[in-house]
Image 1: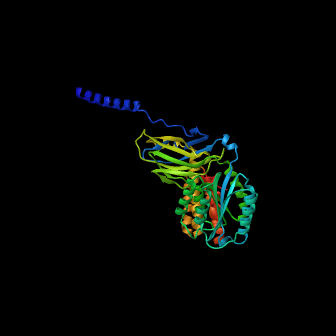
Image 2: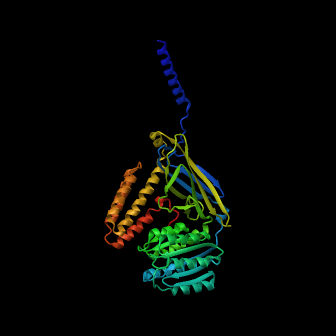
Image 3: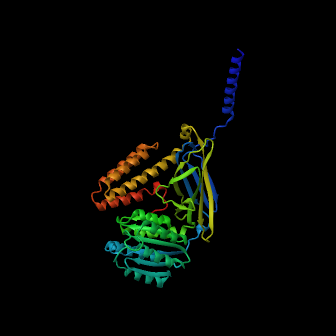
Length: 451
């Protein structure tokens, strides 16, 4: 009997100890969905909003939405003088109406610039014609107009040669420096691969020159032109024909006068997270840290970035964090920065992870990933790889299905499938692929990076 009491007493003591341990051990505190981290300073506001405030101990997939806004301040009220290099494709494929429209747009650009501004003109085919940087006045206007009238399409497409010449003309410039590339084709001489040309755009941008890439006609390599403009901190435009160039170059002048934060970079420092991708953008690795190059900041025009993250396996109660640093260069050349980040607690309950979800951010992240697959499907269709296109459409449908609004995703997939099937020839396929690239910029957070 006494032995039984001893055993029961031991069992009771163990149970009580386990109960007390469970009671006294605090459960991880999970922040409410929708909480936003904000950092302000130097006229720049940065917000970070995660799709989840809890992640599973075995790893989770989530999104972060970061928004960078240049707030209104005194510098923005002064119109900046511009130093602009127009780098114009005059290869043989520009003959006919394209060349006529390009000349008309260039003439209009000369008239838009004031006597505070500088302009250089580079025409590239197989050969280069370099009209050096000059202050805009009555005499130089007449000279520019004469040079534009003399442009004749001929030869191959030497994009790197034209960019290098335009870059050189801006090195002694005094105003807000912009290089605007206008091309209707794919590079055939000089540097021809995307990594080489993007690296060239990066070197241009590193000298505080904003690089804008405008593609005319369906024959352009849309992905290349977008990459060049992104790495160059400028704008991307796909124009079905050159007739829209006049309006677009006018917008570029307006943007140049108001962009007062240049060489904008977003760097990520992670603890127990891996940056998987930034849909629609190119992620570079600099000194071991993922880095994005963003377009110049203009007052009150937010730049939005969607990041897909993967949390790494961790112990319950630990904290996974993402720190983001935005650096930029002000008008006086000074480098400034602001930091913002967020954290998610590690839990062992999948339901707790689900309850911590901010549906709005998660849906936007899912939409960006799904739309990236739609653009890739159109590119595969353009190449004639219908099997790959079909597989990517199925993948997009599955991705959209993760969101609460799966029906809207299904409608997008069906719309793109119908658009691809109705493209009857190579030209229509190319035009549809370019149209879809342009249409989806907003879904990638690139609404302020494209014309």
